[in-house]
Amino acid sequence: MSNNQRNQEEWIKKVVTINRISKVVKGGRRMRFNALVVVGDRAGSVGYGYGKAGEVSNAIAKAEKRARKSLIKIPLSGSSIPYMTTTKFGASKVLLKPARKGRGIVGAKPVRAVMEAAGISDVVTKLFGSHNPLNVVKATLAALTHSFEVE
Image 1 (cartoon, rainbow, N blue to C red):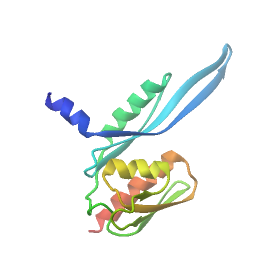
Image 2: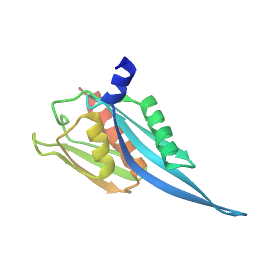
Image 3: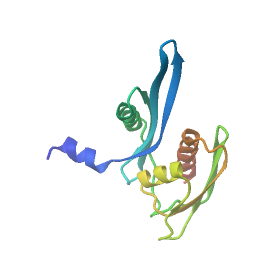
């Protein structure tokens, strides 16, 4: 097995949402799809990507490619985060609280995808405001990066 194949297996890919978009044109409706994907290595590197295409598989592939380009490094503190943090992005506000070992990830699907990809396994989250998955993912990543900049 080559080094490139081994690197592909270490990354996990979480498809957060897939939306169908229809555009009405003269001949009828033209369907397209968009996908939001979170990619991580369960060791502190995580990124997200948003892709649009005529087929679902192509949209997911584009989103995964963009997610690998937008990776950020998050220093891990065991299986949780070091302290409580709140961040807002757009109309979405995310509260992240550390949890004791074995508690698991308590939170919405977009937040859970980011936490699993980053390798954080014990955290309690709460969403306020808009539950738009793209804004929730961006707010979660902002909260994780801001919470570790102080240390």
